[in-house]
Image 1 (tube, rainbow, N blue to C red):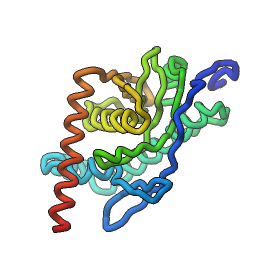
Image 2: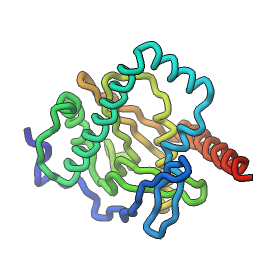
Image 3: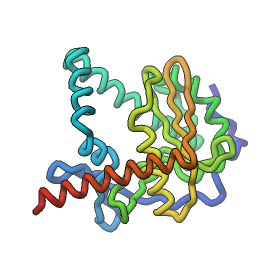
Length: 231
C-alpha cells in the first residue's frame, strides 16, 4: 500500500528548529538535557511523581485484578506498540516508504485516512523545553490538521478508553511550544487508533487553558516537593 504520494506536499516551507535532547536519569529523576547540558525533568516523570493516592490505588487494583504477570505483559506490549507506531509515523512524515510493522498494521489502516488531512507540518518528534515552568518533553507533531494550526498527539491503543492524562499532556506540550518558539497555538488534537477504529478529540480555547492551569499546578507541586526534600 502506498503510504503517501511523493507529489503531496505536507511540510511547511518554514519548519521549526529542532532541539537536541539527551534523556538521562539521576537520583531517581528522569531528565531531558539540552545541547548546553541544561536538564529539566520530563513530562512523564513529573506526571508519575505527582499522581494522587487515588490514582496509585487504581493502578494497584488493576494489577491485582489481572495478575502481575499479565499486567507486565500488557504494559510491555503497549510500550512496544507505541514505539513502533511513532517510529512509523516519523518515517511517514519523512516520506520513507517502509513496510508497516505487523503489530500496528490494523492501527495504521485506520490512521492513514486521517494523515491525509495533515499538512503544513512544522515539527515531528521534537524536543521541547519550558525553562520558565521547569519541564521538558517530546512532541509528536506540530502541523495543520483539518486546516487548524495545532499540536497533535498520537496514541496506539488496544481499545478506546475514557480520557485520563492525555489532555494534560497536550496542554503541557502546547505551552512549551508556545514558549520555546514564540507560537500562539490554541488548538490540540488527540488521535487514538486501535485495531478497530480511530478517534479524534479536539481541545481548544477555555478547555485547553483549563488543562494548562492544572498542569502548571502539577509542575509547581513537583518543584515544591523537591525543595522540601533538599532542605
